[in-house]
Length: 272
Image (tube, rainbow, N blue to C red; front, top):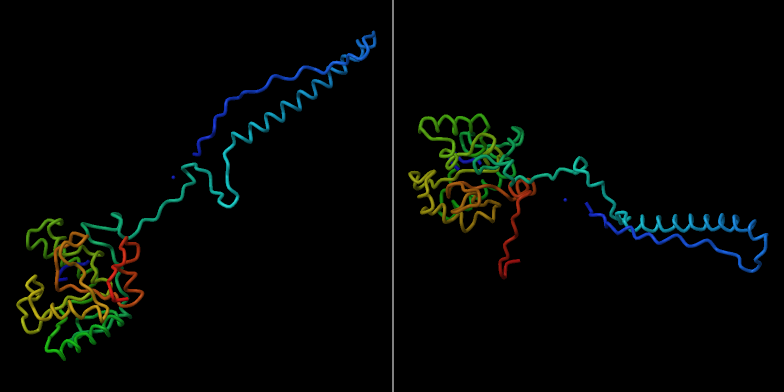
C-alpha cells in the first residue's frame, strides 16, 4: 500500500390470597362451669396454632415470590453499577479511524532488511518468506520488487498529513488512499508494497493488476503466507490496492490481522 496503513427478573407478583385464620378449637365433651376456665386455654392454644399457620403460609408465599437463582449459575445482581463492560473487538468503530484499523508499531529488534540498500524492512518471519517468494518468482521469469515495508508512526504522519496538504486533500479524501498514523498495516512489519521490476511504471498503481508480477502473486502468494490486504470492494472501504500485500503465515501475524474480526472460514471443495 503506497500510503495505506493500514442484559430483572420480574418478580411474580402473586396475589396475597391469605386464608382466613381457623376458628379456635372448642371442647364440647362437658358443658360445666369448668368450661369457663378451660375456654381461655383453648383460645390461647388456638391463637398459637393460628400464628403458626400464618407463619407457614407467609414463608410459603415468600418462597414463591422470591427470585430463583440456579446454584450452578449464580450471577451478580442486575444492578447497572455491577454490570461488566463488554470488551469491543478490533473491528469495532472505537478501533477505527476513517475505515482504518489500529495497529501497534513493530519493535526495531524484530526487523530485518528485504532490500539491497537495507531501507525496506519487515519482521524476520515475514522477511524470510518474502525472500523465498521473490526467489521462486524469479525462477519463473517474474521480478518482484519491494517498494515499501515497515513504516514508523512518524513516517506515516508525513505521508498522511504532509502529502494530504500538498494535494489539498481533506482527511476523508486522504484516508481513501493512505492510512492515518497509528492505523497503517505497515506499522506491524508484516505489510509490503510490491512492484514489477519489468514494468516499474505500474508501481503503486491499479495498473499493477495487469502485470505478470500481480498474476504470479495471485496464483502463488498464499504458498508463502501472503494475501492481498485491500481487494476490490473490501469491507473496510479502502481503495483497491493490488500492490499491497500482508503476511499472515504465522500465529502472531494471523492474530494481528484477524483476531476479534467476525470472519468465517471459506470452504474449498477437494482442498482440505
